[in-house]
Amino acid sequence: MEKTHLLSHFFDRKNLALLALLGLGAFAAHGQALNYSPTAVTSTAGAYNPLNNTSTAIVVSDPDDANSAPQAIGFTFNYNGQSFTQFVLNTNGALKLGSTPPSSILADFVSSTNAADNNMLFPLFTDLAGASPATSFRFQTTGTAPNRVCTVEWSGIRDLESQQFTNASFQVKLYETTNAIEFVYGPFTPSTGTASTGISGVGLKGSGTAVGRVVFGVKSAATAWSAATWQGGLQPFQYDKTSLPTAGRTFRFTATLLGTSAALERAVSVYPNPSSGVFSVDVRGANASNGLQVEVTNLLGQRVHTATVRDNMNNKLDLSHLADGVYSLKVQNGNEFSIRQVSVER
Image 1 (cartoon, rainbow, N blue to C red):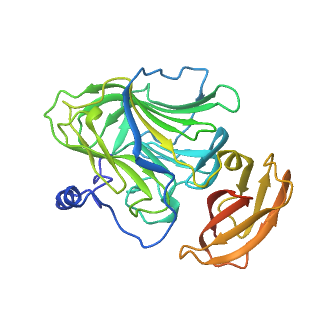
Image 2 (image 1 turned 135 degrees about the vertical axis):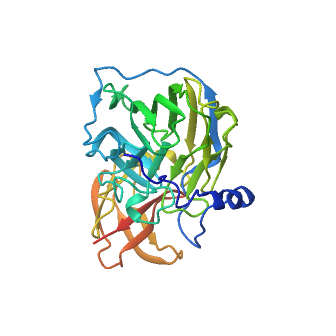
């Protein structure tokens, strides 16, 4: 079903010039930065390996506009200071980490300030629909711990609004331990109609839309995908039938460490997240002879809670006395520490 462009609320024509001038998205005064940086995005020419029937089909109610049920990543993936074991696929080229869906099946998730639209990945977020009866959504986790890879695929997809391609496939890859993310593009079949500008969102979103909480690619319609640049604010990724990606084009996002210790990052898991107030802080193999110190701060940087947790234990952390909101949780062992974000929601 054709409808107003998903990104029209933010990437409308009158805003494009302003975005190009500022190179920025919406502002916020406080909050944890996303653990991915525009300077750590690489673009390479590789190979596209489609998923076959040994992978798992993701069932959706409609290949035009739908969210899937939660799917298992197969390992713990750390993103935006949180630990995720599930994802939800949106048919319009978006993926949300966690067990809950975005705010709707059809919304501008890129510029949305709704907390339900946080922690999202956008390999090609625009108005998409099924191209044929062969349209499919699939995923597969391969490899062995601690180096597994979860691949999520949109296959047999067409550009519904701009009508610049009639059949396309692309994937999101999540890497265990390194928490790297890849967007890999398969064959795109250009349409036979007139070239016109399509507008999409390609990038990552953490907690909200503030500069530093997102990483988005930017390019004009005529620019090759290989020449896209990356910025820490909301940006339009334009294309037309003459500038579609070559099969195998890969955008790789390398995670930066929120803390000083990758080993401590791996040793600590915090769940459920969000929580109504009581969290499990599961610590395994931190090599801490004494207790690990926990410090919780609010978005103003004010310390609101401290605690001690033990190594090789599932520790309970009760934050039910705190107001609903997002907090930074720091776990420290001597001079080493790990930071992640937790959300209290009732």
